[in-house]
Image: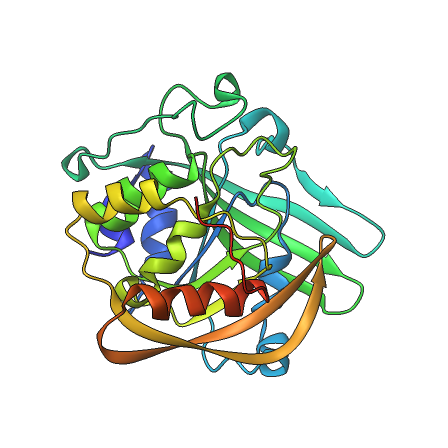
Length: 276
């Protein structure tokens, strides 16, 4: 399934914007940034000069952000982010709906978030046209699909249920301390070989929940495909976190528990990964 097949514009004008965007895309290469908040640095890091620096061979052509905290993000503003180095400005905005035939079940699990009342009551998706002015990279234009979803709701109902392929994954400062997030998306690491992920921009924070893994693996009949991680590029300092770039190398066969724990240790840089 393609992401394009799940989405429909709220108005004919919105649909025309979606059609124009997807008309240039033959193979979807989706970047997913869960708990993105007001951070749009991923857009800068996948520009051509930065990809060359990171050793990444192909860019994404679709960028998806997820975060449930609607009030804090406030996507109705014109300026979404501004600091001494970067300004992120909205120059176009469309409302997007999920097609009824996708049968997506939208929910905010209070066990996964600290402030469930801050999430929209209904699934809310924006297609944003952004202009970013960077004092290093200059002016950049980009499109972003922003899903006001809780991360695991998006993972299960959008990605796994519809077998959407994610090629680039970003996990930086996901907010498990005081950012409103109670459930780390670390379980996603066990799915890298199944979902087709090729590249990671990730910090070293891991809170792996075995019960969440077991539930998802059972519900979606997942047999984990084997993969290795290859460290590429240079370590980044991003939003106060050290962020590493990895290439995901698919291997033949299925990944066993010991091999996967070694992957988590490689990500965290520790020999005692937090698995609860």
